[in-house]
Amino acid sequence: MTRYIARRVLFSLVLVWAVGSLVFLFIHILPGDPAQIILGSSETRQPTVEEVARVRERLGLDRPFLIQYGDFVASALTGDFGNSFVNNRPVSQDLGLRLGRTLQLILPAVVLSAIIGIVLGVLAAKARGGWADTLISAFGLLGLSLPGFVTGSLLVLVFAIQISLLPSSGYAPPLESPAEFLRYIALPLATLTLGGIGPVMRMTRMTMVEQSNQEYVRTARAKGMSERNVTYRHVLRNAMLPVVTVIGLQLGSRFAGTVLVETIFNWPGISSFLIGAVNNRDYPVVQGTMIVIAAIFVFINLVTDLLYAVVDPRIHYA
Image (cartoon, rainbow, N blue to C red; front, top):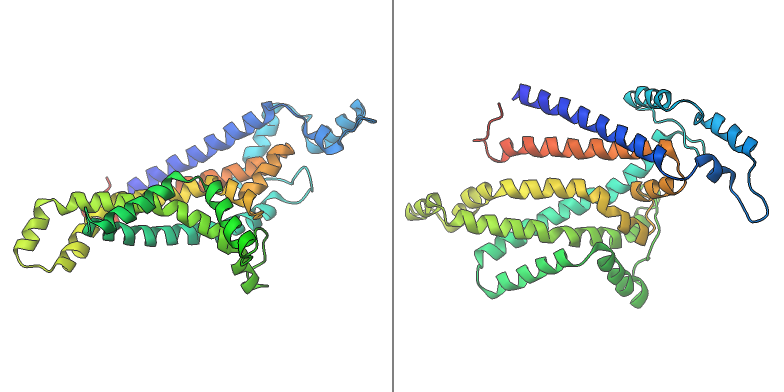
């Protein structure tokens, strides 16, 4: 087990390095000069070559590519992603703030999606072929079919415009204004949660039905074990492995899926931070953000693999 974890951690570090290197390469070959963007331009005046050269020198963009890459890797190893080209603030400071705001959305959304999805999946499996199964399956299919921006727009239309119950966009710090924070987070959280219920519910139902047909379940029933114990001690436990995988994948994919949600609801999270940096060719912000997202992805995958052994003790890693 220890050797397996060590191998996975080493592979994860290599993967994060590869992602960071590719991001560094691609962002430097994209069209658009950060110096030109910083200086700005208009119909009446364009920045001179000397002005652009001075800004490039100040940003360190005039140095050879490999030297820039070496400095980037050395700094990233210490968690220092440099300063933003736009506001000259430390990237790590702003990134930590934006990441925290995104986690305020993602973590409760994944937890709620998992709880509701598992409960609905169990109910659908127990009522297989009945009206409850049909209704729950239709709800799950609807959640899978509707893109996040459609769900978010519908929620804004109903709760923010029609009945004016909740704000359509914005943010309030939870420690300063808890009540306002809950009002602002309600719609984006509902959007992410509704989008995540379907996959968990469908996987739970499918694996529950599959496990219910196994020989050990029929044996447990034949021995007189109550249906409740059969369902929750045997069927559900053995059905959880694929469900854990889906939940883990959801937790990682939510960092990409929040782009539209943060845009619709004007939520100042990591996705809007990254989009603004790409538009401004803010190299340090883009590089730092992508490395952090990649690190989160590989960490979630590692934890998901280790959870398999917790859910099913029969699994051993060599």
